[in-house]
Amino acid sequence: MKIFWIAWKDIGQIARDRKSAIFLLALPVLFTVLLGAVFGADAEDPRLAVGLAAAEGEPAGDYFRRLIEASEAARPVALGADALRDPEAAMRQGGLAAVVEVPAGYDEAARRGETPMLRVWLKKESLSGQAADRAVQLAATRLLGAYQAARIAEESAGGSGAASNLRAAVEDG
Image (cartoon, rainbow, N blue to C red; front, side):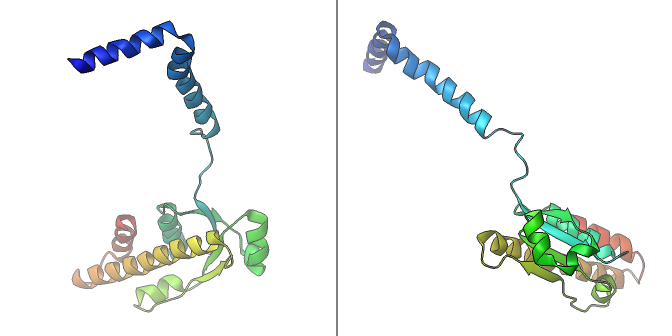
């Protein structure tokens, strides 16, 4: 019962003093509106930009792009082959944390059970480059794991449906 009387006393004081009502009711609403405008929902994607370039007709490039899109740390940015002539310039001009190339023959090598390597350029001296490196390494590991899972599924199924097994492995990620 004591709590009720204390609350009633506080409400009475707030009703008598307009400044208290302003600070308790109006200012929190004003701050909420102000912060909502500053940090609004229409802000662009906060993930690190990672430039991706894949050899023409290389399916692994599309799979790798899907894995980067699913990442919480990085977002893919498509690059042309000319960006690979000077990846550091592409990073500077495009505001990229990293540039990744999926080389020709990656798909075939991974299907044979080999461990093909992606070519990666990073801003090594920056935290964004280090974070992008971790996201790229994770996606590359998941990509090779998807190829391995597809190869095992294909072998157990008698050699049919390799493309659908790989697609399912990448999408299940």
